[in-house]
Amino acid sequence: MNSPNDFNRQRHDKLDEIRARGIDPYPVRYDVSHPAQSILEQAEDLIESAEPVTVAGRIVSKRGHGKSGFAHLLDRTGRIQIYVRLDRVDSGEYEIYDELIEVGDFLGVRGAVFRTRTGEITVMADELKLLSKSLRALPEKWHGLRDIETRYRQRYVDLIINPGVKEVFLKRSRLIRSIQQFMDGEGFVEVETPILQPLYGGALARPFKTHHQALDMPLFMRIADELYLKRLIVGGMERVYEIGHDFRNEGIDRTHNPEFTMLEFYIAYVDYRYIMDLVERLFVRVFQEVNGTLDHAYQGQPIDLTPPWPRLSMLDAIREYAEIDVSGMTAGELAQVCGDRGLEVNVELGRGKMIDELFERFVQDRLVNPTFITDYPVEISPLAKRHRENPELTERFELFICGSEFANAFSELNDPLDQRRRFEEQVEMQRRGDGEAHAMDEDFLRAMEYGMPPTGGCGVGIDRLAMLITDSTNIKDVLLFPHLRRESPDGAT
RNA sequence: GGGCGCGUAGCUCAGUUGGCAGAGCAACAGACUUUUAAUCUGUGGGUCGAAGGUUCGAUUCCUUCCGCGCUCACCA
Image 1 (cartoon, rainbow, N blue to C red):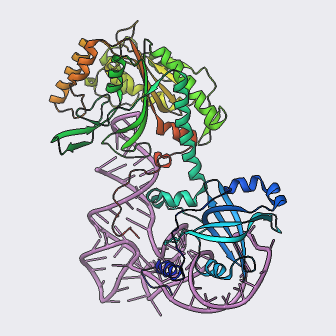
Image 2: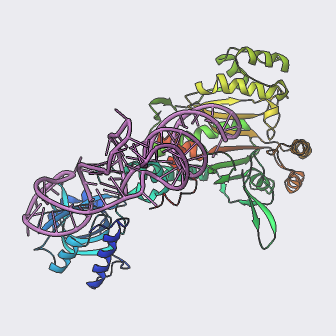
Image 3: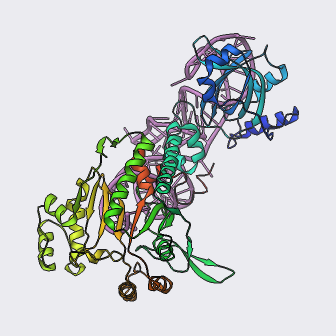
């Protein structure tokens, strides 16, 4: 019966046969009285009362036994077994169930709940209704869907077949809800700022470029929310945040997707120390709400999330972990030290960049438990205010967990003249060919010239946080539809 | 972008030191009215990722390309 190159032919034939028997294979609705899970939970009462229930779901397994048969339906809450026997249902209905309905189809069942000989809670079907005919076979029940590429390309199948997958995304959803609730409690307003922007900024990255036809103007997909959120601080919205997608036209790997989710928030009148406290409270709350505990492990590595989290200046961290005291070193001395430690650096990079290299090479990976690293060199922190006690440093921190960065925050630069000078430096770098240098943003400068209060701001990579909290090693595992290259025509089935 | 690895039936995987392409599950036909990866009997199903090359002969060897994974570089 199976013709070459047309495996699904059989399913089309069954669909035709169903229609020929006057059955609508795609009806409009079905009244569900009980989700699968609630039948299991209320099983004793339901068996006692013998009240019929109605349940609907996708058939994920089917076993025929002559004039009866078992099947499992999968709905959003779980699986429930149904039992269909010829002497309990209309004979025509039974024949359709037996011959034309198969794994993958959606089915509605009405009947009383009972317990089988082997003890499984089961619905004894009195009425059956085909709710949707499937034209493609699902992956097999035992080994499931393992192929990583297919799991990402056909996430809908992955979600049906691999039970842990839905859990990850439910967790991600709870994570974002938990952040929103926390921010509500802190008096924030959640806002939405433009994704299509005439100028991009707020980070150093290559943007996606697009074009508005009617206006005949180029537009960029945003690479950060920062500059618009700061405009809102100028506008008097003293606590704002946005959870949204940023887009960066860069490489794709285990931890990078071209579009990714960022939380950015800004608070007027506070400095980076306030932000540090808030980030700690936020993370602790999120872990408690989403995972129910502060006991966590990532890839088998236990993480101690118990606050307060250590705070260590970048220079102290290098002193402690690399046993190098870089304070007061000249660029030449730094280059010497880097060279001695096997780091190839260009002295032209400047002190800040070399200090950062030392940090990344000798410190970062060792920060397993949450650790705030503070007071970054000014050269590598163009958007942060200079440190109140040391003008070579900035009031900036990053949060590290398991060797990865989870937050980046500053006391924000709010001096419009200084900001203009920094933009001019970026424009100069751009003129020299730095494709990632920041563009001059006159409207942003105009906003800042009206006056921006002292402000603390922070960005948190939500996908990274989702990876940590769901113990995932690839960002694609926490994105429902991760970006992949074009599917080859030959690969399509 | 560089390096390494992978791509065989709808799914999960074997396999061919170069000689007619294999299994389990799924499907199809039949038996079976409380099964649990149901069982039993039988049947069909393949552009071996794509295109070139070497060869009497390529799914196998070579080259290029496509896709995926890991990794280095860059970034969040």
